[in-house]
Image (cartoon, rainbow, N blue to C red; front, side, top):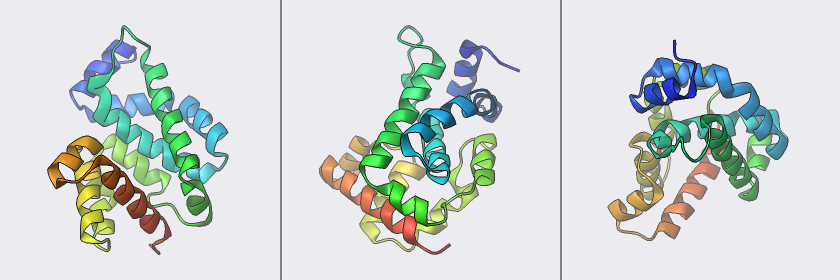
Amino acid sequence: MPTTDAALVQGLLAHESRAMTLFYHQYRPALYSAILRIVRNRQSAEDVLQESLVKVWFAIASYDETQSRLFTWAAKICCNTAIDHVRTGRFRLTARTASLEDSAAAQHAAAAGFQPEHIGVAELLHGLRPEYRQVMELLYLRGYTQVEAAEELSVPVGTVKTWVGRARCLLAVQPL
């Protein structure tokens, strides 16, 4: 069982679900606490943690051990995601509504290699406008960056960001 940062990074780079599970169990308490200090709502903190872990999973190739420790790098992703969450006002929506995934689904996703189809993301997207659905599928199901999605859809990056924000808001208020 890898426990060192180097071993975890190697496992994450190989997209080993066991490495992500170990990462989750090792760093979840500290990352969750940092997020909770920013969003100040337990349900929102769980949502932000889930979103952040997906970002870690897809961005692990950009991690540079000469620049920071694995935890520090992951904490920066979590804090930036939490700040974005607060700035966009999503925390108000998630504080009032049920989460798209409960914490059991988040743990299942981490253990199963972050395959969004396991938590029904594709099914949730069916009710969205076609352009919102397309951009969400590219970002969350196919792992595109916002820039890559903009190129794929032949729209400006700002449009991608707008569509994502609107889709997230719609998904946050949909009855499950």
